[in-house]
Length: 391
View 1 (cartoon, rainbow, N blue to C red):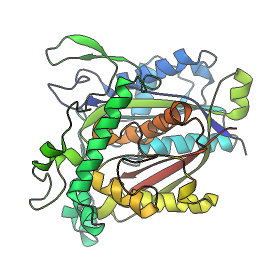
View 2 (cartoon, rainbow, N blue to C red; view 1 turned 90 degrees about the vertical axis):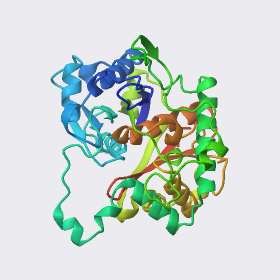
View 3 (cartoon, one colour; view 1 turned 135 degrees about the vertical axis):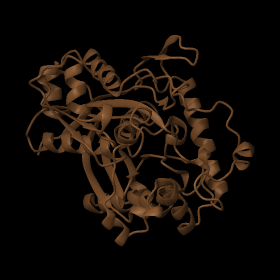
View 4 (cartoon, rainbow, N blue to C red; view 1 turned 180 degrees about the horizontal axis):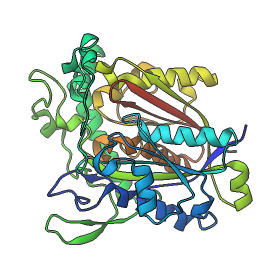
């Protein structure tokens, strides 16, 4: 089989999904996708848009401005009609699913050059827009336990995740994200995009909006539960509503060599797994276990981990159950912070964490061999991908 390599990966900054304060409140999601596509081709002049076999775009809520956004964004961006597009939904892992579809197509020899992307505008297309649950679900589950906040509470209770530990995770997520930003460690992956300040003036956005400058454990301890009166999950330990887009340029290793493209990581394997939707956050436990078993590896062989911080409770439960990490600050996980600080534009995040993993393994951990990216998703979706440094 062919080898699939990451030639490049870029993303917009993540902005607040807020009608008055969001830096991207006047942008459409297709415009954000155009920005990352333009950046990929500008940074990789040896690749022409017409050379792309297909574009896969992950989006969790495919309605309104995000209805078939894969096709609409490509055409609206002025890119060739001859290039096929495919919109993919797996809830939060949608962007990762897009990567897997592209990687497998390359490995099977169906094409040599693909773009895998993720996009979500949680302001213009709020969660649950135009969604209708099948009434029969109520025969199988307590539908009041299906909303993601309630699943985070259920996971916290079952895995005995304390509020203090969750707040500690959020604290380090913000601290690490701020440190990475201030040291220009995101510069390799972030594409500046024009946005609007609160007063309406335009400016070039080159950093994520959600990172808190003065994160405080004392202040977090004063916050009220967000989803359950006697619960432990607060807004501080939950990923915020966010807008953003990202894209990766994936190629067969042979084609990349032919074009003179540089690369560092190759795709090893990916696994999708399902779980109880009332505890959707533990999806990575099943996906990662199956993935490691499939490739004959153990958790202690993983050098770098990116896990999407949908909620601190589920991220901690997964890391501890899998034997990847036990306490903060983490030694190999989310070294540039996670979604609690960077934001979680649903369908974008599965691809974003792979871009950040690629960045970290090139710059922060140049001697690391194996990198793992994993995340949970609404209604019990889990996903994980394994990447290996090319030696």
